[in-house]
Length: 230
Image (cartoon, rainbow, N blue to C red; front, top):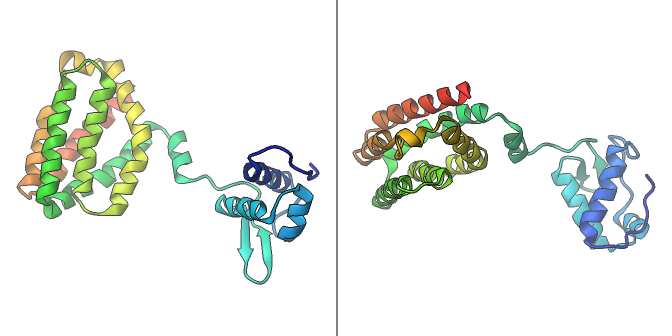
C-alpha cells in the first residue's frame, strides 16, 4: 500500500496505522532502515512530532528499534502481544492456576508483613463481602470477594505481586460470575465461602503464614475444580 497524505484526525493514530501497514505487508522487511523523520513527515503530510509519536508507538509494539546514531530499523513484522492481551485470550482455568501461585505466596507474606492498616482493610473487606452476600447480585458479591483477596495481596507489601493480581482481575471476575450463575452456588449458600475467608483473615491477623497459605490454597483448589467441571 503506498503512503499517502493524511487528511483526518487523529493524526498520530493514522500515521501509526499507515506505518504499521507498510511493515506488516512487507513493504519494509525486517532489517530495513526507515526513512528519516523529515521524509516520513513530508510523505504523510504531518509534522515531525506526529511521526515521532507514531514511531514510538510502533517501537513499543515491538516492530521498530531506534539505534543511536544509525536510525530506526524494522525488527519484526508482527506486533508483540502484551500481557493483558494474552490474559484476555487465556482460558480462565489457566489464569486461575497462575493466580494461585501468586496469591498463596502473597497470603504467606501478608501474615508476616501486615500492618494495623492492612488488618483494618482486611476486616473492612470481609464485612463488605458479607454485606454483598445479603444482596441479590452475583457481580457485586464477586467484586467484594475480589476486593478481599486484593487486600490480602496488598498486605504482602510487594508491588509486583499486587500488579500481577490486578492484571488477572478482569478475566477472573467474569469467570467467577459465570461460575456462580451456572452452578447456582449462592442459591444454596448466599455467603458462599464465608468460613474460609474469615479463617484466612484470622490467620493473617495472628501472623500465621503457613495457615493463611493453606487456607487459601484449599479455597482456590475447590474453585478451580469447579471451573474445570464447567
